Length: 259
Image (cartoon, rainbow, N blue to C red; front, side, top):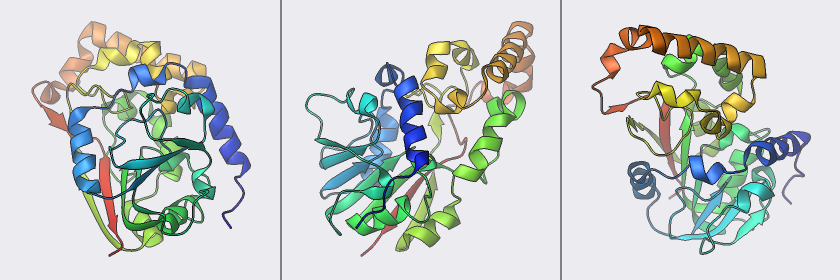
């Protein structure tokens, strides 16, 4: 029997029920990222775990799992059915699906090694695909220069690629996912060449990393960024990025095959 969700899960629901209003507007799927994920996933019935509003969900999805009712309410009318449940207690039989997808979500799962990741193994008979951030990657300018507190929060909650392999078993491959300079999905690293976008509170409200920080910490970092943009210091410091089309800011596509 799947384990009972923890208090961490309840706090996660509270976070996304607080910040999730309008989430689907700022977190539209980028078609280039979508193509990479779908190619990695391949064919077969899919369960999308930690599905949120349904970004990157392939047509082969038969079921979505999402903790937050507010997030689930923003799914398209023609999307796959959604069950309100926790990744650490999937209400599914063993080997229920050919594939499983988890996009920028595993860092929100409580006790990920003992429950959430093993639950993915349990219900999937073919392939698991994860989009995650590698805590061993070098931080990019936003977290390096303005919000080092985000890295401090993220390091303990994002598993390394080797940790993922140890818990998920199977045959594991990991590939960098360079982020396009004009990415339309507003996650933390999306605006690496468009720094002024981070000044928009509506954009920051769709990024959970900002919502975990004290308000005064966010305002302090944003004010430094605003000043550096006005003075030209940001452009001088990051001149090498201005003509780059895509950048590796630590995101990884991890594929696990079980046969």
